[in-house]
Image (cartoon, rainbow, N blue to C red; front, side, top):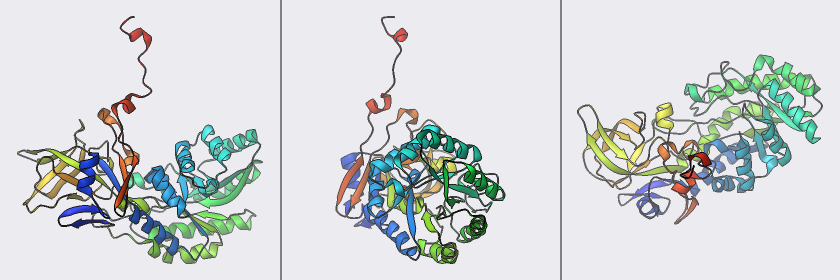
Amino acid sequence: MHNFHYKEGKLYCEDVSVEALADALGTPLFVYSHATLLRHITAYKEAFAEVPHLIAFAVKANSNIAVLRLFGREGGGADIVSGGELSRGLAAGIDPKKMVFAGVGKTKDELREGLRAGILMFNIESSQELIALDEVAKEMQVTAPVALRVNPDVNPETHPYISTGLKKSKFGIEIGKAVEQYKLARRLEHIEVVGIHSHIGSQLTKVKPFVDALSLVLELIEGLRAEGQDIRYWDIGGGLGITYDAEAPPLPKDLADALMPLLKKSGCHIILEPGRSLAGNAGILVTRVIYTKKGEAKNFVVVDAGMNDLIRPSLYEAYHDIRPVVANDRATELVDVVGPICESGDFLAQNRELAQMVPDELLAVMSAGAYAFTMSSNYNSRTRPPEVLVCRDRYDIIRKRETIDDLMRGEIIPAYLSDDS
């Protein structure tokens, strides 16, 4: 799957043995396939070639600067939601004129950073944010380019935690109030309206919610233009799903074919914000079995990666396929694959049929290229894993494994707690 394949019973990423990587670099370990990342952005570029477009990768999915650099070299931009992600995009060499800044809680410092960098536009999510941006732009004696994020109240039919386009969502401006907010933007001296934005959710497996949402937004675009608003950019969001288990999400071409009549009719420069569909199936998390435990109610495979490394199963009850790195012909058994974290919610899989494992063997947690490392933590004072990018028969460490010194960097014991006090 996606350049992860078995050769003589051993899992490979492209032409590099995953077992050899684990032996050389230790575990846990994130491994990404260059060929898969490249293939996925190429699929988007080809699918939307009929309209002017920008593929702004959702940095929150995978923020490693090597990954961002790869997409930037292919003409991609960045969908950012923090000052830190802005800095990462710049460090990766992405043109700021290909960056869009979203998020409900941008601080004034972050707004300044975006203006200073000269980003393409801010996706504004409230009237207070709009006014704050106008104030910051006035201080800096510049004009801020904006799109308003419109909430079309369309059910994306995905997990509630990653649904962002419903009426009850914290994101965006209700579509019925959008015209009023665009009028406010037009009155503000240091704001320039350049576009419109919508994003209904993540891990979407059907085209219809996209079509329904964008049909509503297109009507709004036409109404805004009738009132003299210059809507040049249409940021249609991202959210296309991937196959974790039995899902059959549409391909970029399927999405493009369904949306193209709407996009062409708009006459806009289209911005897309794919994240998971570019990076998700391009990565795996490699982990080593520490112990196996047999109980009356459950059997456990205890591994050295936990919810601190990959929180999606614990947070969303998300499914990730788990495969032995070296295939074996032992009988399967029903197990929970659990980590070393001191929480009952620390699991990578529950009630999973898995070939019987023994200590020191390796497992690969598939589809871990998105929302994996970026959501990791140092809980239980555990160091975060390294990241590796494989290109054909070579690999490069694109993030070093954290050390204990890294964990405590910046911490200070006050003088009154010293031994001499």
